[in-house]
Length: 330
Image (cartoon, rainbow, N blue to C red; front, side, top):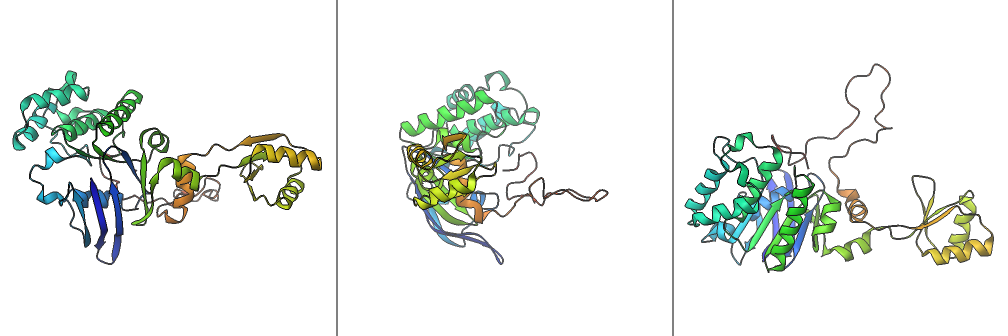
């Protein structure tokens, strides 16, 4: 189990993480989500002893990472797949890790095959594509056959086959009782992979719950109604005590079920062109919950238009905490 207790990290006058308390339990794939700048990478670095907390602590298997006797056998981690000597072959990189952690050489060949790197094991890491580098990083994380796995954007750069491989891999490990924490910005993939969510924003805990409960609580699961008489329909629905909101496409979203909509429009002879149940999604729930915690926000395209002859880009987005050479911005 991973246990974070009142975890806090300050850099001068800036608080990156504040009072985080959560648990990552064995037997589940836990998603670690948050907008850019939320403090995810800082939290993961404190988990792995790379940054020292200002206050609080993280325990893995009952102890801080720096006190683990055999860290690579206890925790497998992928924070930066590019952190490999470019002149070493994949095979030699894993051999060095194995030798320094008293791991049998046979395990090196097992993870190379598991990661699909058998055909490129003798190629230098500096020649690898982003996806191949990710596979090598995951192979290194699996090298000690650890009980705990911490993965930061594990599907970054992978093709569809690789994405499915990661999904099946982490779910299989969790099914065998391992503890898996996975950070990602791909909501569709997260929805297919994880069982539980820890969501943070501006360094603080926003949610710690199951995926289904999270979506049910924060996503709009009402009904989309399209009508040529939106004002009249709104009045009818409001009169029945149904909350109504406008959608960007001009339709209405009503917090009820399609059957109730049908009864009301029939009773009041309101013409409707469409009645569709909204499909609640993890992405929508995440966007709603974190709307007030987004630090780096780009302007909408229409707002970014500049007068003819104006110089400079219209967007205001700035580099996030994970913008580093060789990586895709999160």
